[in-house]
Amino acid sequence: MAEMELIRPTVLVVDDTPENIHVLSGVLQDEYSVRVATGGEKAIAAARADPQPDLILLDVKMPVMDGYEVCRRLKNDYHTQRIPVIFVTGMGEAEDETRGFELGAVDYIVKPINPAIVRARVRTHVQLYDQKRHLLELVQQRTRELEDTRLQIIRRLGRAAEFKDDETGYHVIRMSHYCRMLAVAAGIPEHRAELLFNAAPMHDVGKIGIPDSILEKPGPLTPDEWSIVKRHPVIGAGIIGRHNNELLEMARVVALTHHERWDGSGYPRALRGEAIPLVGRIVAISDAFDALTSTRPYKQAWPVDEAVALLRREAGRQFDPRLIPKFVDMMPQVRDIMGQYSEISGRRAMGLAQQAAVL
Image (tube, rainbow, N blue to C red; front, side, top):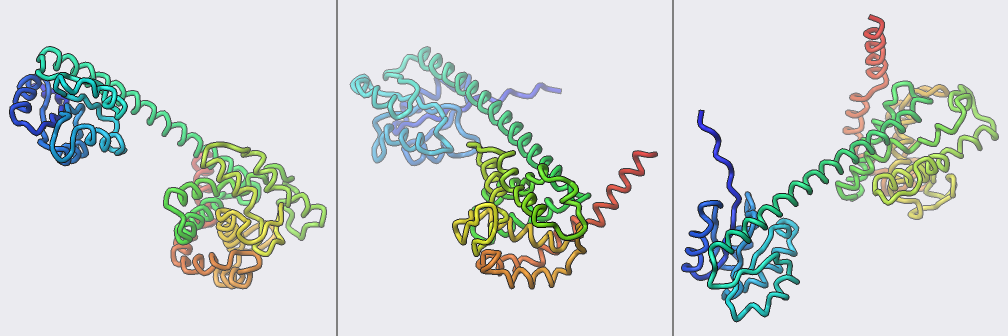
């Protein structure tokens, strides 16, 4: 079986003169895959094409769009800004080197070219570019690993809080899905809706600081007990803390504001209307609906229609009146999520796991 041929680096040669292209291609073709472009627009298109070149040799003097403008556009484009550019210029243009470097070029080659110098310069910058890409890939991989770890910690903390009064922990899963759907319906960009999906499980993390005897009490709470329960948003925000990280900051805001009410009668800060962060208003609806339709130590699960009727009655009082119709419109998807992450299926799964552990 023949050995696979190594993939050679690609060099894009940009020049409006066929003779210059021929000379540079001849110098490089033994070590590199050479592509050519005879003008600025073609060069930009070739640089954006997949696979991208590993280096660009760019003539300065070209009609319509000169090399400086081509370089400026390449460096202002996220997709092409990292590709190294070497200007190829005549002797009379060497004084413009500073301008080229300011635009982001990595080197200059002066015409008439010296083949050995061209090969050496190209080889050096291709190797540097390859090293930079490798380092960038390592950084991106490590960033993904850290972000995944952060997400896992947030989810585990959310589940830990929820297990205090929900033995399956499915409440946080269901309401997180509701939050993401409602966020998208409210016009929040997809990436922010995904952040909310991952931040929402932390909404009740402050319950960790509330005694089980109060959370699991089957009857009505006394005024003193209720005042203790109302501390959990502040406790939760304190547990999460302030961060520059977008996800953790959103989780803190959600924990602190999900019990505020549209009419200003909520807690802990009695915020009113749009003074309540939008993510807090979204979580308030999603959390309340799932709490109503779930069995808890102090209540039976409500039928969905009755829970929806309460949401409608409380629009403009407890809940943002513009979000309630959007949530009601989502009810087919909400019912799907309720079926997929039901308490019955959760308990059945836990029971099977316990049987397996005994066996």
